[in-house]
Image (cartoon, rainbow, N blue to C red; front, top):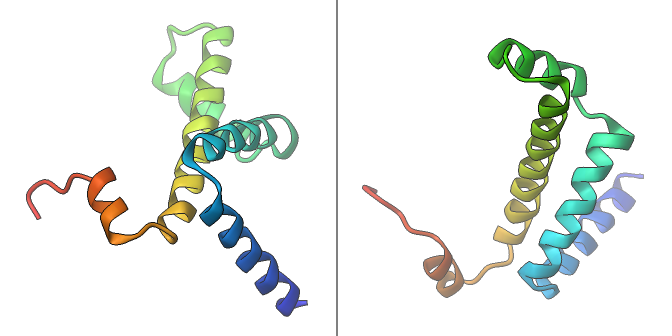
Length: 100
């Protein structure tokens, strides 16, 4: 079973390697929808924290912020995996390191 998980991971990395960033961000949007509506990953905790942080916000505004939280999480996950496949030149082009 671990071998299949390893193969899935390698295939996922290869898939991320060959697709451009614009496609990954489309995939990221789908991942955010999955996390928000199907997996409901830590949704109760996110909503509670947002309600505690922004008591003046309505329920509709909180739901809007919740989706943005999931979108950001999905973007970070996809960008992290894409980072494994970037060349040194691509990293220099995309990242600015201040005060190393």
